[in-house]
Length: 79
Length: 281
Image (cartoon, rainbow over all chains, first blue to last red; front, top):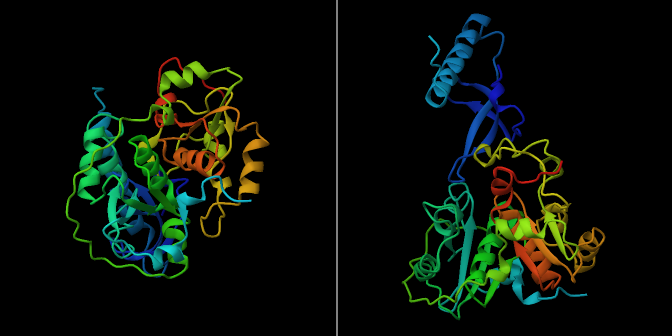
């Protein structure tokens, strides 16, 4: 699974993502204050432990998060 | 051949052998102190956090003379203190602070060549405890505007043969393919490209990739002169937010001895966001 909003970000580390408990490629994004935060770019789900349904759930959670963020900055006012 | 002003550089061994004391202050300058100073720094070094300490908290500008005096006071720096700066990101922000210190007239100032990168490569070691520094009184000089280029200076310089603009960003930023790398999503501009007539001489061409130290004077001369950046010209350096350009400003002014070099700290995040500014791709 890949977070396409992180496209182009340099992979600086590959380690366990503690939230999903699978190996993930990670990069660093600097915030307004210059502080770097590690962010997962793509996750590697072992086939013998995860099926597509479970991974789709994670993908939907990620999509929901980005829809909420978009609503904060660019709310959709269309009826 | 030596640098024009070799007294502004010290190496890591020198810093190891010459720890800070009452008259010598060691200051780490970080863009990201959480992943830098707070994880470990050279013993006795205080911290200047670029965002918090060097920028006005409200307006986009560097700190005022009064704010600068307070910063120096907090760091125990007197007018005649010897100050050695080093930092993260290949000394970009240390160079920016060098520029601000010079802007407010501090004389005895040096950069540790290679910054955190070289210190770490040499496994010289860090501590986490912060020094207890008694405050002092500091009286700054009036700002030296000859070191700083503003938007109107750059606009006025367009097309002038006696002025040369040095864009020190990456080639992809210069051509407008990107406005900022994905790592810095807060530093984009509305338009990509460069100031018309600018030369693209990335900051990285001035340092040795292996350890972040500055290249020899012969290589540096060749690097700039071949592109028409010669000592007889007025030189204006810029990048995205003015920190990489202060690194190149330092090289041109102190390592090569150019007399007329200014840093345009507004840089691309100002130029590329202004309505009506000409842009070249």
